[in-house]
Structure formats: C-alpha cells, structure tokens
Amino acid sequence: YLLKPSYYIVYLLTPSYLLLLILTPSFLLLLIFNTLLFATTYINTLLFTTTYNNTLLFITTNTNTLLFTTTYTNTLLFATTYINTLLFTTSYI
Image (cartoon, rainbow, N blue to C red; front, side, top):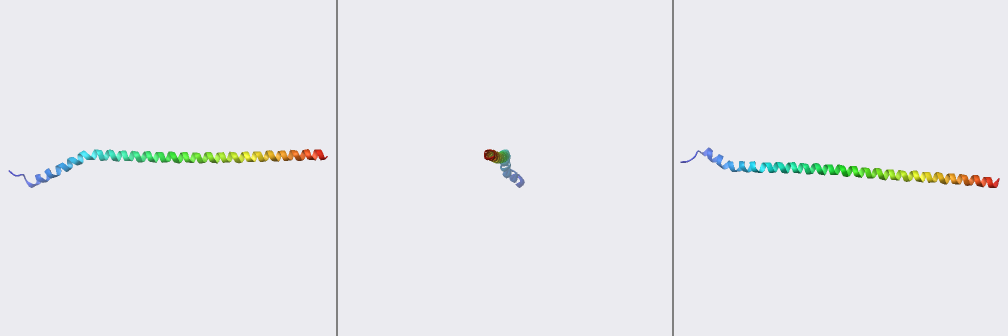
C-alpha cells in the first residue's frame, strides 16, 4: 500500500516545521535580549554623556569661580594700592 505523493511532501516538511516551532521562541528570546542589551547600552551612553556634561559644567563653574577669585584678588590689590597711595599722599602732605 503506497501513499499519495502529496502525503510524502507533508511528511518531508513536517520535521522542518517542528524544528521552526522549537527554534522560534529561542530566536525571539535572543531578539528581545539583544534589544534589551542595546537599550541598556544606549541608556548607559546617555548616562555617560550626562555625567560628562555635568563634569564640563563643574569644570566651567570651577574656572568661573577661579576667575571671580582672581578678579576679587585684583580688586583687593587695587584697593590696597589705592590706600597705600592715600597713605603716601597723607605722609607727603
């Protein structure tokens, strides 16, 4: 007793369908996992960029503070020089 040829095709293809059914969930899991890894990497990159920007802002603030301190010191020096000039003038007079 022989089966019709169309049944042979079904019997030949069934193992590959079963293999696809078995492998598809793992492929989907891999895809989801890779997407999560990419998202994590992207978030970490954003966090690094934010940290870098904050560091630059801190450096800029620190530089501005130093500039302000220098200006303040120069003002004090000018005031001291002015007072010394007044003292010299007073002494001279």
